[in-house]
Length: 467
Image (tube, rainbow, N blue to C red; front, side):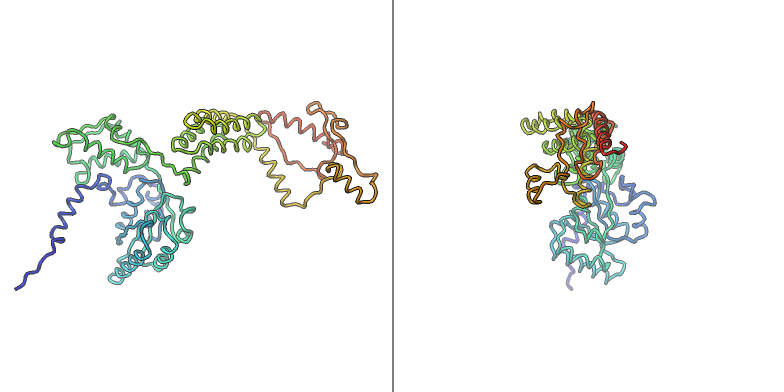
């Protein structure tokens, strides 16, 4: 009678999995397994919030999760699949080919044939790298309901993910965890007897927990890795004794905070936007912070100088004519000095522009004039202010000189006298009366406003109009 041989892989699978779990990193072992264990993200997972309602109702459609690294996109996808009792397949969009996509679809179809309730979730990390060919194969299966797609990306999906995927998905942004959320995650790891250090005598000071929470910059994985490094490197770890971790030990166990900044991604534009809006709002402290964020992340200082030069004209203008000169000098000095010394020049310009009086009258003026030029009939240059050679040619072609044609009046000799401007030309210089430039009463521009009002009044008077 023959014996049935049990494959060694089956015989030792449980032991292998147990040993594998033992050597897994703390951050992997502490991954949440239920929605309630997920830290933060209350805006989508709180009571009555969208994602929790979808998962509870089991009416899950395709989703794209986007947000900074370490906010739990992969973990959340796995928890969603488990909570809705669906098969979970995880792939990276950069490495999966069309053949693998077809294979996943076939697996999902076979699972449905065996049990109509056996639905599949396909998780695609870095979904912004998904190619057109992969998408064409996958979208039909998604629309048929063969599988549910959950994508994850650190990029803005509206800018980086194919529009066909975006249009068929619910976009959910994951936010960085707060310091309180990170501390809660660390305390859970210290108390958990199965996955964390609940069976060991590990004592961590409040200062140490706070330091990890701040330096991890909203990334729970970094905080848990720092805790693990501190425990494993403690002298008492090997002999099973009590482990005490203070602030100094905590700081030694975590790397310097890495700036979440991509010079071609969202953070680049978001920080630049925050910087300019802070200067526009006359907040030098906020301006210096966003300047420091960009410089610390390695932003090109010439880019920053260029943005300040634009702001000097767009948002300050004639309220302080020196602002554009300061911005120009800053740009030139940044080119000549380079970093790190150029940070001081940038900071000087930042604070000067922030505290300069503000006016966007020049910006509004040119926009109004351009709008007029583009949307209204083109106005001819009045004859009396044309170039002299053009006027002469026009008179010759007419065959005789028009004695009634208006002659140009040289302003320095014939203009009306103004106590603020000297001589003011009172002729018609456009052929129509318009007012594009509307100076404010801010800073130096208040003086320009007074001069402009006087000049306009004199011209109106010359036309016989009430100013």
